[in-house]
View (cartoon, one colour):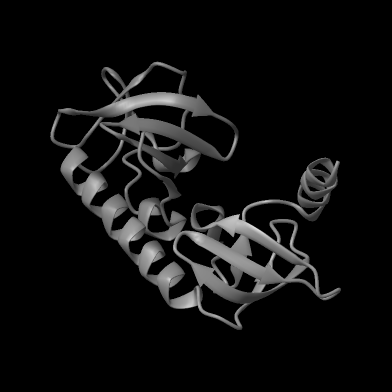
Length: 167
């Protein structure tokens, strides 16, 4: 599967064909052109994770309507994939711009992790406040909606991993 990204709720609020309904895992979601968009992979009260080709796309639960054959979106599959790919490209561009030496990094919980000391290929070396170094792979980083560079790990999980590695 390719990357998962949350599609902007504001953009998708306009896509709702009818009031929200409960989707079941395995349901086929239809587009406004009468063609299948994808299938429901997971659900909760706030979001629905759909499999659309090679993508896993999370959409707000209230973006769905009810059609004659089940859940619908007021968009076509091609339009949804295009929006998703544009968001992935924008997220990648933001990450590339943020991953620079000296940039501050926070953890997912969010706590200060340190600053980027250097970038060695796909490895990012971070200097922590205590002068210790930690190296994380590039795919562990994202830029959050506020523009903050974040490692996708909590401080507790990072500390546990470092302790386990130390022996």
